Length: 296
Figure 1: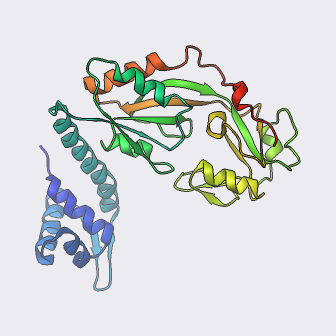
Figure 2: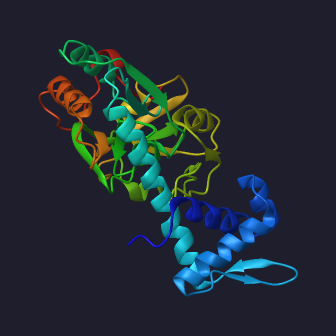
Figure 3: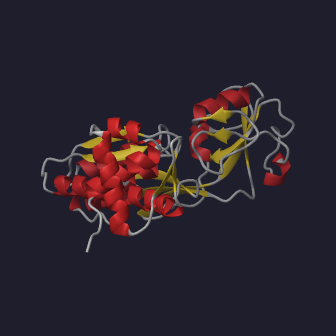
């Protein structure tokens, strides 16, 4: 038996976020007394207090903290289920592909061309994500498939296929002490300022905050930081920047990912087209003669 309705969870989440019944009521467009009554009804049904109320503030109990975390996931799951159900019944639905600008290792055009020739191909809408929310697009149903980089993106709960495996390189100012090296190791970068990636948990370096590769390269050029990236993200290099392979950096993988519960033919067809279009050998990528990367 389901003890809470979706609307009740929405009421609770609003109060848990605002920690103020008046603001939560405005957010929900309902009267404050009705909201207070609904919260008391939820607490009575669950048999535990969710909030500590005083004349000055509202705070969450441990039970409230737990319900906020799991309730938010439940609302997201319900929303995704509704969107997917509607799209499954829409024979004209477009396929939505999410990626970060420039993060396709040069494979996107070939994948789209291959998919366009499939008999059940749909129009593909390209969605551009922020620094670290591509997986959110897939989990909450805003996108059907996505191009992600492992191990940087969290693939938990997502099905995926590797399209390309490549080495990682250090991005350095052209006058840097390591710029002339043929190769280096991660330990060679000890003490160097690395980027703080905006919105990326665990991406905290000691250098300036950056949101994308363009910002990183600009900061490297003026000597504010160094970076370590998949090779394809920085080909061809700009003047004033050097690129040196990092021998002991784990390789990165460009993967096509989708919600593990999404078994629609719409998605399966695109995955098949992507696998047909990927390079025959997905060994460590090397620069092509036209995009040779070396100190400028």
